[in-house]
Amino acid sequence: TQPMGARVQISSVDLASTPKISFKTDRIVSDTDMFSTDAISKLYKQEHSVTQITRLFSAGLLGLNKNRKFVPTRWSITAVDDIVGNRLRGQIRDFPSVSNYLVFHKSYLDN
Image: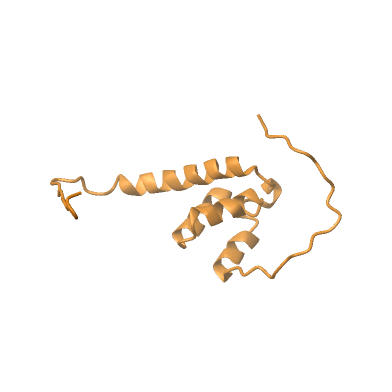
């Protein structure tokens, strides 16, 4: 079920400071013809943290223009984790299998 909270009409918004956004991030956010899955993948390839991507997705800044809307944080975390996880899973499948193991042991102050 969709989370429900208090609804309030916003009369004005003031920014506390000027946000600093990288050029590459701004290009992806400004592209209203890019699917959100592609935008998330591109941002992840550019080494943005999953937390930053989740915030952009939750604020409705990614995806096709007609589909952009605020998403509850819980849903955005799940969606971004799923998209990034599926991408990484596809890459990991091509890795060679492990043929031998290394085991390390360290003791310090008899612990």
